[in-house]
Length: 238
Ligand code: 9WO
Image (cartoon, rainbow, N blue to C red):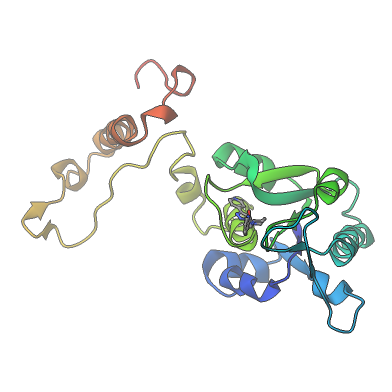
């Protein structure tokens, strides 16, 4: 998957390129990130990338010229690789569609995407109207910029690229892969501060363990996140 990122702070993305599964996926070529920094498209001596909002008030907006030039370079970058035609420009913003695991599956199946990271108080509405195809939120809160949201999105879609996560079963057993929360897990020691590991997990009875885990998933979801449970996701037995 090709991900072109429009950002004033490309160095922030070392958090995903330098560590763990996302780093390995980059080295394996499962995910390819390219950066388009509006600052490099600024034309004045000071490489200005912010500008005052019409109507006054505190704060600044992203300067339109360098921003649009960076977006267009990101489009051209994908076109030149033969990956441009269907790439959408996605703006990370609290006004977007809230990302959930179903959305992650949708995004992960795409060949390419352009992620637009806002800074300051955001971007001119006409740039949104003319250049942005979709808006995605990673949660109902405000960040200092779109980069952490973009990294969150990239991390989630990377894990679904075939081969990115060592054990395929561990992706299929993730929380939300069946719409339910994960069951509780236990490791050594067998007794921890007077609490034992549930007996069934020591029994070697794989069918009983499977049943217990499903029941625990259902209970955890009902107790912690009841809004996730709908008739459609449960079968008769569940
Ligand atoms: C900053 C600001 C400063 C003074 C007065 C008002 C203000 N509003 C903002 C603001 O909303 N800044 C945004 C920061 C501009 C767009 C990028 N930013 C952002 C993205 N914050 N939070 C997100 C985000 C993205 C995806 N999912 C959750 C949050």
